[in-house]
Image (cartoon, rainbow, N blue to C red; front, side, top):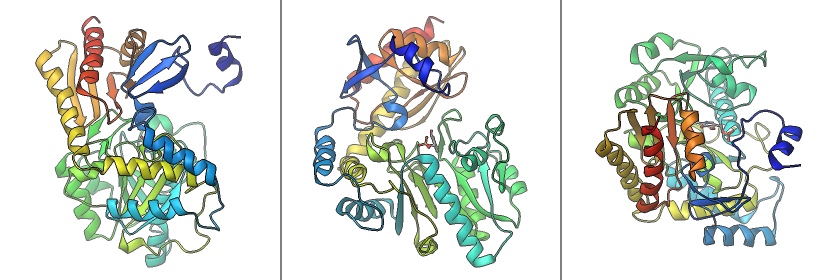
Length: 390
Ligand SMILES: Cc1ncc(COP(=O)(O)O)c(C=O)c1O
């Protein structure tokens, strides 16, 4: 049986697989079963920030794998302690809870916000406001948290207690009420079309939140860990949230998520309030330490910003007839086109380039943060040629 038939036969139909099976990768390139080379502008949806085969990351993970791959969270392990200290310091937060994915991080963030409000105000103040076009995950609760109607189907009953606002100050003011305990935002909406929030809107979120003792949760699952040229997406704005949820790039290719909180919330979770068997797994945390070591090196994130600028300049100089807008921050870029993004995705794949989509008309670029300008230019030439030929 060939690989694609095997997928059709045995995997549930949740993904529309592109017709390629990858076997290995090196740097910013991946190779399929016939050894064809592809330049990767996806990083496995924002995960492989250090690229493939990073020697320090592999050494750290292999070393930990040999020592001890797992301990229950009723015991401590060395990497989880090292990571907790490094990560909270880099994030300017007080404490962290480790988990395995973005959805799980958001579940933890939502629980934490609701517990804080319950402890202080009692029942009836548990509503979380999220933004239209947001994406927060695939569990029953995070689907409901996602501000896109198409996700609120089939799986009833969803978790109660979510309201949605447009990215608009008036809409936000109209949505807030006395039942509200938190507002959850992505500084740059990824799945929703690569939409950076405006400074005016973000400032208003924090201003209203502070006035009403409402918590701000920044979902940094996609835009965090250096993706935008800063540690977090919100660092591009002059704000600091109460809670950060993060995942994807944190583990450098291994499943890893985290919820970070500030001083106000550091004792909100008590013994038994939350947990996760694999959360803080020593192998994944050893990998995450190496990711943080790399992105916190002097000048690393400035280069990410420069490379983002390089992409924007490229399209500006070409002034393509089929490109509507190029937006985003750092190496989180959305290219809105006149045609169908999925068609472009398939066409560039044939020519050896991997890109993502974010809706019907947006090509999403999330290349490894370590990509070179030469590689960027090579991939952009392929992309431009296909967009122009449509
Ligand atoms: C902003 C955001 N939050 C949450 C998630 C869910 O993450 P995961 O797929 O790791 O559960 C995603 C995934 O794309 C995301 O982009």
